Image (tube, rainbow, N blue to C red; front, side):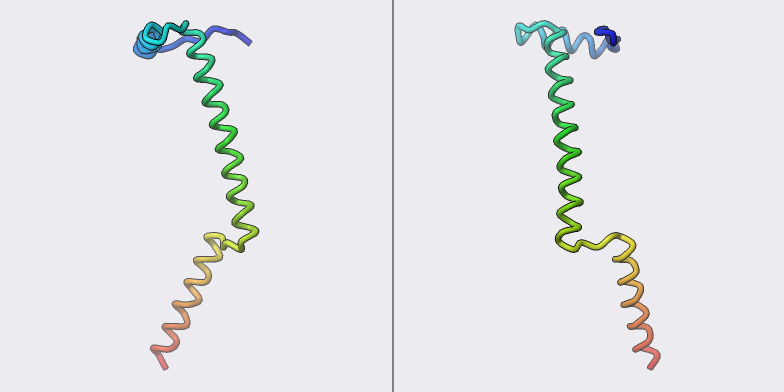
Amino acid sequence: MSDTIALPRALQARLEKAAARTNASPESLVRRAIAAHLDYLDWREKAIRDGFQSGKTEGWRSTEEVFAAVSAQRAKRVGKKAA
């Protein structure tokens, strides 16, 4: 894998300014930013998976199940009005 990436000029300029302000090399800032974003993506994937598992454990209903229940309730109400 290549260690070189092409950045748009505007992004390159922002990176160079940030590097100058922080006394860090642009390469080190990019490495840290990529690592931090990958950590976030890993965390987000786990959080979503855990959320779905929690929903299954707690008996959450799927969208289809909710729509079916609402339709059944509406049908009952319509039946009561007709009687």
